[in-house]
Image 1 (tube, rainbow, N blue to C red):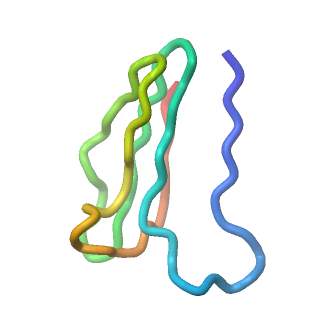
Image 2 (cartoon, rainbow, N blue to C red; image 1 turned 90 degrees about the horizontal axis):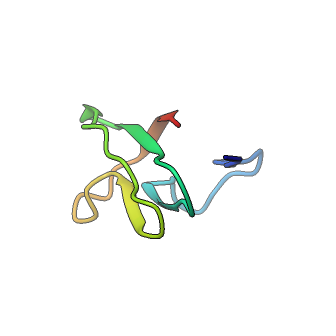
Length: 71
């Protein structure tokens, strides 16, 4: 399984990254995110063919500070 993901860039953003969605066509991908003022969140995993959101709870809109991904 190939996996490639880019987060961030060298230009200043209008607003900080709060989260991301991920989908895999086969296998399992398990991100764990670090959210500002909340620390490391519980690791979650995708299921093949389904989209899943990872990051700050959508109602809190907190900055995503780091991502750790297990494939």
